[in-house]
Image: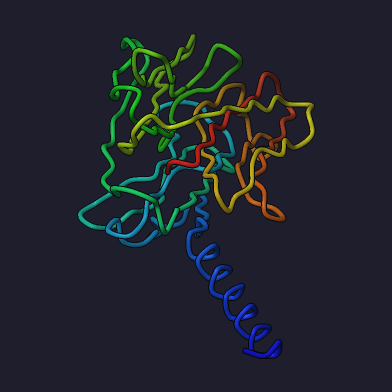
Length: 241
């Protein structure tokens, strides 16, 4: 076989391997909702998994909420507000690596932490509601050696959280926290890692308060802003999504 044929085979082989690598990379769709709009359709739950990836606005009580939900075979993003500037973002992984079935659960203040499942689960926030006035208002997915829990705290009223879980055997998890006053945090490569919100806290008073998980130049980034106090967010990342 001559060198030109060998070179052609090498190019074909490299192209094929590149195609396999790209096919195995996670792929995403992102969506945005703001108060006054109808629910946003996120697509079929048969081929994707969706989660809350950003919140913004004035969370004053029971009238303020944002959520990613599932109805029948479809995901949707929505919310409500009696205040101003309430918005939300959702991210969908359109090619998860395993079972796409998600179990949704809700926690509200006054309850004990809600058990979501054993440590062979990947769990993420899907909803936020209530009066967020400072550091004592927290919603959180807690990963422990005993299992995964959904909980929080509040000195105010009507604080609620939603979460959903995927069954994944012994997932490797790493968490990152952003606090107001810090610059955006670069987390992990988005091609082979999925990052999702697992904690939000602080005083959300209007358009100046927001937290967001996004992708930029091939990496996940966690960022936010606040003209108030104590606004923080935590994202957890895994390659087993």
